[in-house]
Length: 248
Image (cartoon, rainbow, N blue to C red):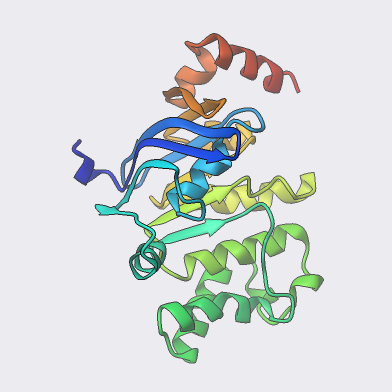
């Protein structure tokens, strides 16, 4: 495939935070409709890579291309490209004074310029998609963590993104709530959504990932299929990491 046929192209990405070299020459290509899960130890650069893909962090050096567009710091251009990217964080970032429905309609009206009625209809469809239509008029404080995260996913999906980025979306959740969020993500994967997911949920990774990227110390150490990574990791660093996490 040429670069033009990849929906995400990352070229030689570097990111410095003072003395910390968080990304040290990362290159990655993602085909449309693929689910790429990024794993690795804490501090390996996973979340920084995800945030650079959306230019929430501006790379120190390197290029990020989204659907054939080179990202730059030009705000108008950035806003146009970002409108095609849904982003779900560890923390739900819902507006506490707005209901679930209002949280899902707000950006639609502001960014997509939809009418109140259009936005509400789309919001309801997405709340149904994530399994909580009955919570439309409920405030975040009255929702469980898993329900709040599902509202956050519905909010991102309501913008009709071409790409969904997930940054450890279950790490702040109680164990019994993790499955309900991962099930929504699995459904998205089956529907063909292009997804870049930072996760430590190995069950989800095996079930949903088309490719796995293992990162350590700001580098991609191994980029392969789930089967190859779990059955036959090539790098010693990968073997060590897997032996530590799969014991638990």
